[in-house]
Image (cartoon, rainbow, N blue to C red; front, side, top):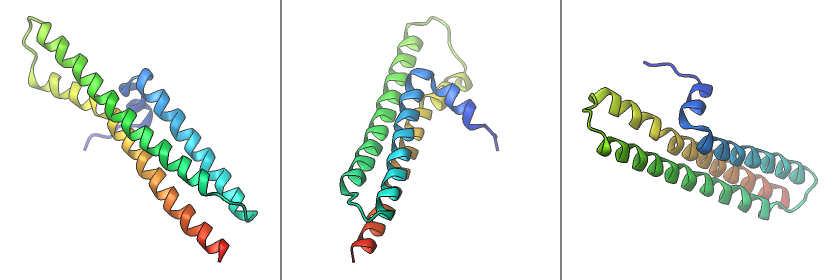
Length: 127
């Protein structure tokens, strides 16, 4: 099994695509922490739960769009070239292209899990 670090994945995915996804993840973590703080004070968190969910959806969409854009650029470069590339080189490029989609879906899954936990917690505090 090939072991790769999170930093390597972040660098391989490209700054232009991975930094906005990391910003969305940071915003979501902040909203979840703030929502937990509001829950402890018996505050209403429904709009924050919705914000967490929507940011997760945005991260998934941005990751998918980044992957499609990366594949579009890669296939364009391959089709314009005169050199025949080995299969391993093409698959290595495909692996890099799906990093953003994987990261966006990871953020989306964390967002949904956070929403579920926050909704269950807010129902318990209201009852």
